[in-house]
Amino acid sequence: MIKTISNEYLKVNINTRGAEINRVTGANGIEYIWSGDKKYWGRHAPILFPIVGRLKDNHYTYDSKTFEMGQHGFARDMEFEVINQNNDSIELQLVSNDQTKSMYPFNFKLIVRYELIDHKLSTNINVYNTDDKEMYFSVGAHPAFNLPLLKDGSEKYEDYSVKFDNKGVYDQIQFDVPYANLESIEKIELDQPIQLSPELFYDDAKVIEIKNREFTTTLSSDVSNHGVTMTGYNTEYGGIWSAKDAPFVCLEPWWGIADDIHTDGKIEHKVGINNISPNKKFVAKFDLSFF
Image (cartoon, rainbow, N blue to C red):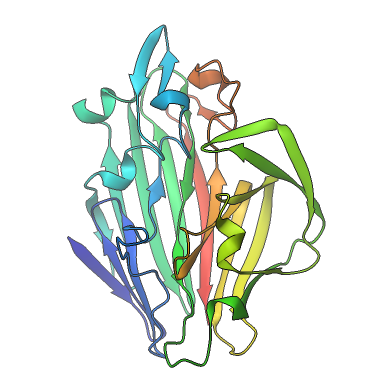
């Protein structure tokens, strides 16, 4: 079911399936979020939980038991309950059940809150441990943005770049697709924007380690004054991705990452894994500002 929040600047459609942003329309008429054309990629902005990326051979072990789970976890394909909604905000909830327990042996509550503040859409992903044992998880977001944003022929994909407020040298994670290879980390300098081209993503996503800091990236065009800025808070990893030759790009804040090629398969040893004690919560927060 599609739910809508809005203010004088933005209108946002959110699907209760996956608590996924399906559409963001500006008062300027621009459609910011990717249309979900299955020719390239049939999603818009999925929530990733309780893993980010892919498990090696699609399974892991916990307490001597083996569990299977697909890429990016199950939350993006499950129906959320709307627990609160106003004109400019909404909260959606997923609670562990028999279906989730067959893939993930923890009791949890996942609440996604979206709130519009002027030109900004603020997202809080709240992970609650409702179990009586330590809970292991990863969480992230995968918003995709139309490129070019203007459909009048005045822009093209290659006019866009991704700029970084947090300049400096970072570790760039290399992949033996679809797994991370932590023995093959390269340095990347982010003092200059990354100019976009389809070829940039032929070898999969570009992922850097941010190490639990606030991190801001801006996707914008050289020939117009429109784009989107994403700020992640206490972010562990950041990704930029697109499908092959697709007219969109994703800016992805992650609190987790795909399995390392040398994983032992135990979820408590998984690279980028988070853990919270019983009756505690973890908050993953990011903002999208549209212009």
